Image (cartoon, rainbow, N blue to C red; front, side, top):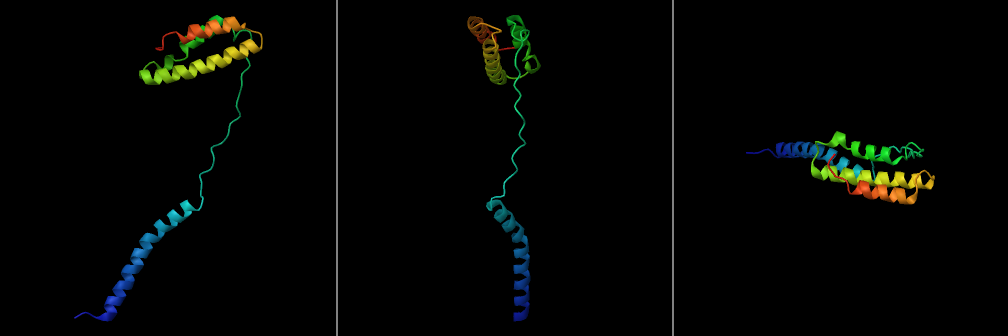
Length: 123
């Protein structure tokens, strides 16, 4: 013997409970879909260092190139290879700036880059 009013009351309570549980999920989905975006990361001014005569000395560049990856010597070969590529790109950029400022000749810079490119990848 069930009472219709009890069934109705339980139905309303269960419905309210389910709605109260699902409402936050719906709000989260709606807010995510309404174009809420995370703020852009802060921008930092790019710093370009202009080389001087000391910076462009071939022996100084060689020495720095050999020492730069020492802190990463315990990393895997794959990590060292990636770091070496980045290091070569940075060195090429430095050599270009040295040449553009007449602190190195193009043949000197090319020779130094070939030498560094063929050096051991392990620090």
